[in-house]
Image 1 (cartoon, rainbow, N blue to C red):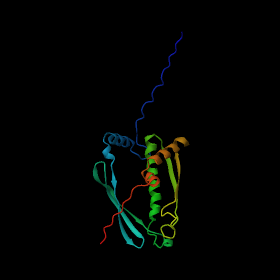
Image 2: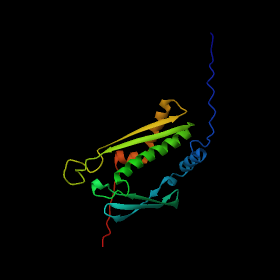
Image 3: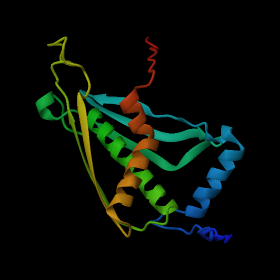
Image 4: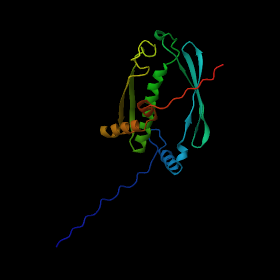
Amino acid sequence: MQTTTTTPPAAKPARKPVPLNGVDTPTLFATLDAVRGQPDLAHFRFRATNHWQQGTHSRTRIEGFRGAGAERMHEREFTFDADHPAVLVGRDQGPTPVEFLLHALAACITAGIGNIAAARGVTLYEVESTLEGDIDLNGILGLSREARNGYREIRATFRVKGDAPPEKLAEIVAQSQARSAVFDVLAHGVPVSIMVDAG
């Protein structure tokens, strides 16, 4: 009786992470290991403070946050103006609040694409996204009970170029969507409580 033996394929050598796409990949993996060993490090609390300017114009200031077990400050203070365009009785001093939602979604998924591509050893050449949100203002104007106040649909298109096959680039976008905090909030909702200190 003749017996045959098969040699298992040699395991691929582990790829040493190197900085890629502007992402410090070694630090990214070190952070993952640190959080894996101490899950509480992943508990963050972000904050924003908004002040009314006039009319529909307001300004938001973002300075500090709590995360990785300590109170932290951004490298500098960030300010963002929001307003309504003239057609909506504003002075157009900034994007509308709902346009900031589109920005937040695009920025969150794009950040994930950068990190995930770097972790998988894919060099990115270009990432561009276009987002559209449809909203019926009959809701916030109080003219219809059927129209919801917020977007009824958001569409995002991502164009990605890199040194990987199209299907792998599409997988990176899908993975980023699956891990996006902003996508999760928009797609699944989150409890929101509003308190008032009037006087």
